[in-house]
Length: 204
Length: 204
DNA sequence: CAATGTGAACAGCTTCACAGCC
DNA sequence: GGCTGTGAAGCTGTTCACATTG
Image (cartoon, rainbow over all chains, first blue to last red; front, side, top):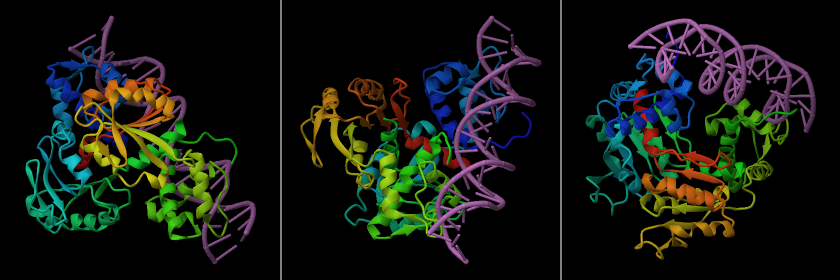
């Protein structure tokens, strides 16, 4: 395909494709067609073909897409080919749940540090990790951790976000129900579970 | 405004507006302009005006939107004016975190039942509620609960979704990393935390 | 023949610009 | 003057149709 700006929505779907392909890889499936993949993911097949074609021609006409190779390509595109380390801020109930969430490794993501500011939590173990004092987030710079998950109460979210940005964090997944003010160069993705539930009654 | 189909994206933003307005309501602020609200939410002001105008003319030119009345209207639009009950399926770490999540009440949402299939959890208390056997989801029909949050391991998600649909549930918030097959009339919103984190490295 | 890759048509959403009103 | 409400313009993303290839 000639020059094309890649739609943000396409990027948002890439991890979906990667997850599906990673699972197929495990099951040993060699190839998959856009039609089969579309059925699994509840998408339309031309969408998948177009999305993938933005990054090159991975498929074989008459056959489909090679599972391994396509997964490898997507990992490279998303920069998930070398495992990405992320810090988790907040070791409350939500943080604890996330720390034990099994879905990260399939995407090459790795929670590599946990912070909290409650004295009774600092120093305690959570899974493989020791909970650190939130004031130690500055160390993320030298530890080369550029991603963070914010799972603090909302009052703490903005100050924590600022500390993370100061520590060189470039991407934040914000799970608290508030909007964060950060420099434009920092990418923020926010999820508010209550808000997502709040749209459902409209459709009843 | 003349006839217009309401964009799905507009609906997705309404709970955001409602949350912001509910907070302003608490603080006792009487009115707010689209510009101020836009700044708070990191949106553009014409977007907010257009979104609200799909549902009628709530604002006063030269003044802005009346906080109380606009919040009331949005609650009615989203059917959040009478508190909406939701069931939570899965009382693992994620389910437990959600059960104690403070953001629901602000939107008029209420977790009214919790289910799990682990015998050592059934009968235990979680917050105000007693954990029930997953097989009892069928009772949701007579209890008039039409919304559910799925926080089970992914293997259990599809069977649980089917049980929920059979029990008359019309909207599901799916937090497990898999796609659900449900009848078209049932609205599903899926959140996969790992996938959201997975898009961030691309933007580093 | 089965499936990809893609320009072109289409649909949906956002932004603009400004008339209208307090 | 300040701010809403809204048609129209512009933009972004999706779907289609089909030429193309193994």
